[in-house]
Length: 417
Image (cartoon, rainbow, N blue to C red; front, side, top):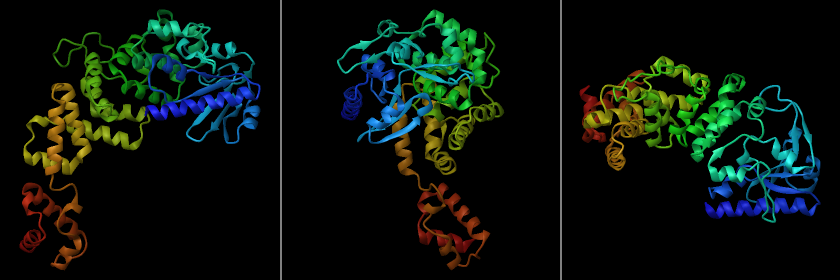
């Protein structure tokens, strides 16, 4: 991974060098500079330049005009691709997302001034000089998320920046600077203007980083109500459905943080912690516009996890039936969920249990039976629906007695039918 990162960074600097050789200013900018200073893993290298989009298109052989109206050209290199954006200032934001127009400028400082947070408003030159007009490096050292300039104006331009502030605070374990925090509380309702898909994507990044920090900040800033349908526990300051003497949202964050980085598991942990019923769960998943497969995964996990029997009490027969009915992934998720909530120190034991049970499973589907529909018809079962019925009866018997899954034994049972 590190080798790949280094190669991508070398290519990014090649793009910068090529722009400079053509007489333009160019710098690495934004998240890649922030993460480089934090010595975190780097994924995307964005480049800002004084070159106009048409000049960038002329300089590089392989390009895609991805956001030409807003000054962005994607440059395709051998290993990776790099977004190159012209220095710009933004016009009025009428939709709370994108400026109506952008004005290309020749000043790096003006370009950095339009960015969301100080830690994202730094640029790095090929000479190693850090351009940091708004104190981003100091905020990194102080572990603070602070808006560039007036935070209310930044959030009026794009309300999603409020959730980005929470997400960065969660991912980096930073605090949100007081003035920026108050601006989020003041502007929270403007999240209603933001597309649900954009909100969902930020929310998922929070769930997969530090959900305990994220939930605390989302509730503190009153932005959580614009992500999730309001469950019964939402506005109650004192509510203790678990009898632990603790707020269920606090428990949700703690338990999700212990769960694997699997969205379906973490969603289910959340819904169980705050005791969401199936109807509200369905509505929440619909409103978040989740992909169909993810919705199915979450609902299956929730359905099995909220049954009376917990995994610790499943019999051998129940394990076999549940694997057959729900599939390995759902059963594994429920075990991980159980471990996260009830047995946080037993992850290794549950991993071993799952591996052993999976290896012992005699039947995952009808295709695993030692006989086929053709075999049944050759032994007197009439073609049509009866074949499927007999196969299901055989599967039921094999789940009860795995040793029966041999062709001759199953055909003998069929003849007895």
